[in-house]
Length: 363
Ligand SMILES: NC(=O)C[C@H](N)C(=O)O
Image (cartoon, rainbow, N blue to C red):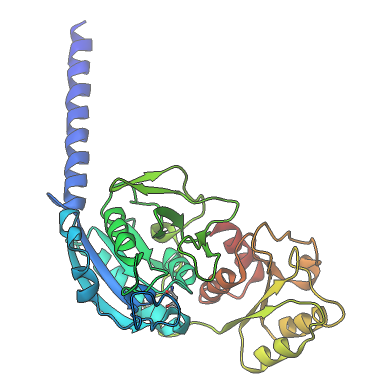
């Protein structure tokens, strides 16, 4: 009996210690009081301005600086200790690998600091899905990273930037967002970087995660999560760009009726190390025009990934093409622009197509 009491006491003391360690850890991760959120500005429509308040097309993106963006939302002070930094100032259609490397390195440096709990990146919406997936694969931290934009310039009636920024800061400072990978949050919805895509040229509800579904809502100054991605990302990713200054050239060839081999040959001549074929349907390849051109490119050492222009669904391995025979890789559910990013990062590690196929089924 006495033995049991001693054992119970030991168990109780141990549980208390564990609870103390956990609460110390959370307190340590978050700091007392409001979370510290860093806002990194990169441009886009959220930082755009138009000739008048009714100008919602034909405005100029990337004109407003980080201080003005933050000052437009004084409510931010009530939800986080916010600091801002202008990393660059571009419309996101001008995004390139150099900007990505610069941004990823800055994000990793900041997240390694104890005084940063989360990061918000303000970004143009045209390539937000690409930047966020790139970061999802190369950020080395479980701390929240939220990428946010707007569909109306900052000068417009009912500009969506301020509420989107407010929600993004709350999300980046929340415990709920820890370990969820890079998130894209606009229009009160939270999406996973891997699966989100821009779905409408101009409406405020343009961001969708077709079929797989978005992760949750922002409501009443709080995130509500209902699902999360099962794919590897951020702290669990094997990709590391910390010592890289360039990424391998990877291009996308779009599949369409009557296409010929001209773009494939042009990309090979330009030095592509990988080609993503955005095929019709289940990633099908036009014969006789396209398939032999991809075979020839492959023989020259170019890694070929079959993706689809459809926007939903798995590209079946050995389905519309004999991938084992051709030594092609399939993109799983990644759309062509995201398959391009994973292929670039894969090529920083290997040219082994079996290994690259594993990566496409992992991330
Ligand atoms: N809504 C936007 O942000 C579009 C703009 N072209 C950009 O991506 O920078």
